[in-house]
Length: 637
Image (cartoon, rainbow, N blue to C red):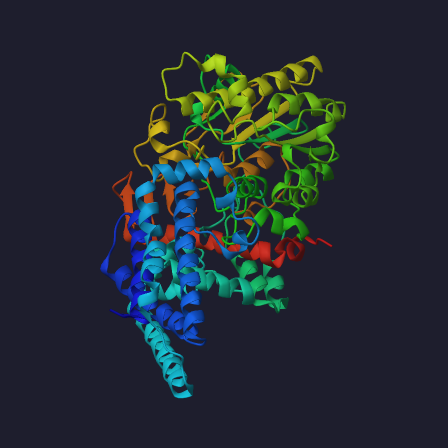
């Protein structure tokens, strides 16, 4: 029996698409099935064409290579989605895509998802078993013209069908032409089409437009003071010839700034130590095992509805969101990409302009994610393992010690009159076991009586290192007699995705498995605040920078940031990497198109308006990054 090659290609790719879709999105609808089928057919025609251009032997070899490549690619994308919750971009693949970073953890993910992995790998077995029975021909000129004609007709047919779904913000037509939203695109049009669009947009660029109506706009009350500076947006819009820049001007002109409030300037003139703690989560906070973390979380400000969503490049994007109050762009390393941009609203650049000593430290490789480029651009004197820190601590073990980092760096900045110091920790890094995690092994004896799984014990042991580092930091500040004049801000880069969901549920209340894993703590602590200040607003890592700037009484324009001061009356909003969101009125799951109300007064218009706000924040953030926007608005050189 001979197998028609185009039919075989079509069935293999469709099989991969359906298996990926079912295990990632857990459901299928008729619309998605329709679009995936027709776009898969288009891809199949193209592959059939290019595998008929050579001799029979070469055509079969080329086909096998393509099938093996696509099978591995679909499998890698699935593993990546389980691990990070996103679609790997072509940029990440060629820059050491994060799916390949942690070999042992990848093996664990594969073993825990062995059925879908095996199902995704089956085409490799199939193509090798039946390759001798695949019917191929060597095209003559007329046959080549016919196949190209069929390809062109199929292309225009696929494009025309997009008009059947065009009304919603992430409709088939919108994600194909106007929206860069890989998760939504892969759900509606399939993974192959998503990757093709990503390659095209990476090579030739892609302009994504802001939705004209800014739903955040409200009337400014003249009696109130706002965190804003005088910017004549009307003149800027009139004189601007670059449409991208003009659109951002218009967006910010129509944005409402956050107002100054009772906490404005509360910490003015104090020292600031801000920490992004690797994989920190509520699981790490225990009155007995991590007493310093427990004290910092439950005293000073206490944020009850705070989230640290994981974005596309895990830790790097976690840092980017926290340090810039901008959302990361899909398909690039935003932190690295920002290295050549003018960034006036980062802690380093702001506090340096106020006369502070500004330093940043990381007890991992100083070049990882190109921090040696991004952090100096943010205004820090940056030291990590490899450019100096290794001289004062042990950088060879994995993961490295947060305690040793504090010990090695404190004297480098603490003698300055005022200082702003940033730490990116690493002791809490996966994997969570006692064999391959030096920090977990170091603190193993302290968690041996916990009645939990080995992974939870190991995670807790790794976070004990962070707790002791904070204890040491506070002790040193007290010995220097500067503790009362220092503010510690601590948040996480992302939830501990090195833990299985079932393991997290041992110690954390998780009802919504998609969103609740991202719930976290934000610490803003000063020793002089004796009564905890409880804050119930929904907030996220995007909001940390404007909140801290307001607390320090810094002059800034809050309209130019995507986050909002949590302590102001601005609307609380949590934005996730697939454009899902939470407000005080409810939560919206974009992949399921499902809104779960917290209050009964929510209308469809409200849901659409928040979808527009979320979309705009992503587009504006991307355009700020790509166009180096702040130099236009704030006079960077």
